[in-house]
Amino acid sequence: MPADFVKVARKADIPQQRSKLIHLGEEEIALWHVKGRFYAINNVCPHQHIPALHKGTLEGIKVTCPMHGWTYSLETGVAEFGNGRVKTYQVRVEGDDVLVERPVSSW
Image (cartoon, rainbow, N blue to C red):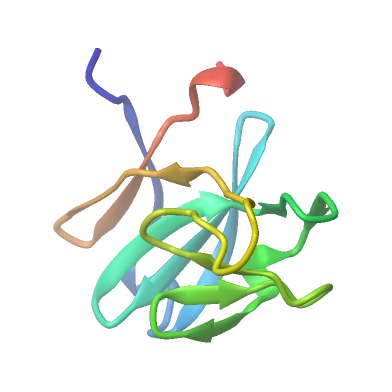
């Protein structure tokens, strides 16, 4: 089944190397703008279940949780060390609009 996408922001709403916290249903999603591309991951760090990844430190396309230092790939969601993984969402850009895949569990 093809993914359903929802407009969540305009490109200008998210400066380069920054993120924006968005809510889709019951999901908190960290939307990152990195070198002209947009990435969307679940905002909750699976290490201690703290919703803080939108405030993390960015290095390349990896974000480090500000609470305990776990680092995740924005592309794959895989933790740099250990077995952790954060959910990723597809992102599309249509003109000036940024759309994110609607989480299945939220609707």
